[in-house]
Image 1 (cartoon, rainbow, N blue to C red):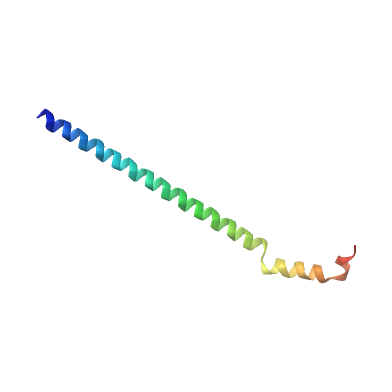
Image 2: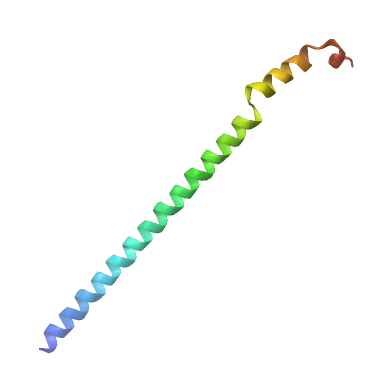
Length: 70
């Protein structure tokens, strides 16, 4: 009887360790997902900063003789 209770406690501890490992894996997946989302947001920001309209305006300024006066 005593041995059986000890075995049951050990199984319960093992289940708890497995649940903790699963929680840690879930936290890691969440961190990775957030990291990818931040990277996508940075990429969108870079695209907005260098939109074709902005590049076109810069080209016009660059080619405009009045802007090239030094």
